[in-house]
Each structure stands twice: as C-alpha cells, then as structure tokens.
Image 1: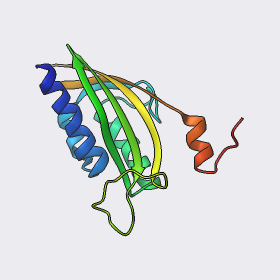
Image 2 (image 1 turned 135 degrees about the horizontal axis):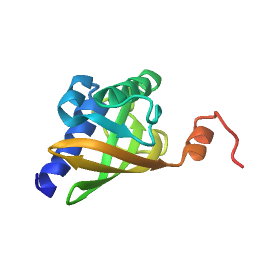
Image 3 (image 1 turned 60 degrees about the vertical axis):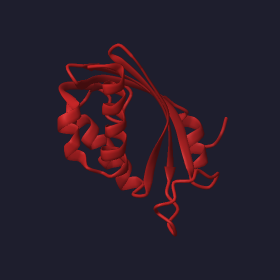
Image 4 (image 1 turned 45 degrees about the vertical axis):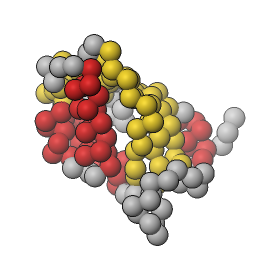
Length: 140
C-alpha cells in the first residue's frame, strides 16, 4: 500500500471507530495479531478486539468523545498520528471546535501497518496532566 493509502486507513479508524463508535470496522482495519503496546489493556488482548475494548471503555466513560486528527504522516509501513481528544459540546454536537472547556488530552500514536492492516501501535500522552484535569489526581 502507498503512504497515502496507509494514512487513509488510519484516518478511517479514527472517524469510524473512535468518533462514530462503529467497532465492527476494526475487523477490517486491524490484523488478527495486532498489538496495542500502550493501550488501556496493553498486550492482554490482541487483534481487533484490543481496539474494540479500548474504544468501548473510552466511549462508555466519555460518550461525547471526539478525536481530531491534528497531523498525519506516513513513511513506508509506519504512520505517525498527532491527535487531540475532546468532548463535543452538548448543545451543538456537530460543532467540533476545540475550546479550553472541551479539550481532554493530546497525544501521538505511531502505527505499523502490513498488508493493508494495522499490526501494532504505540501511543504517548500526558496521563498525569489528564488525570489532574479530570480531577482524579493532584499535580506534583
């Protein structure tokens, strides 16, 4: 697959799975042995089920979750995604404008693809800052 094909595949995962909650799309985009190295259930569940469980848990906690693709770059079999997760405004769910009140966190995910499927990923995000912003942990 070309770099633009790989970018399109990752963008489809964000839009369909993360933003729309269409978990079945994971079966098309993730390899059966996919490993989410830095996910909520790191290496405990493999394949599309790893993403389905992660997204289901996140959307259960934040049903108004919206992930914005800030930057997407592909080189060979690797795609790097810089993203922002936010909560959509309750009064205008179609408004995806990022504001201080709906911003949750930002992160970077590196994804390795093979044969048109995602096979592994690594994500970095500021967990301490996010827990603090959610009122779940003090800043140290």
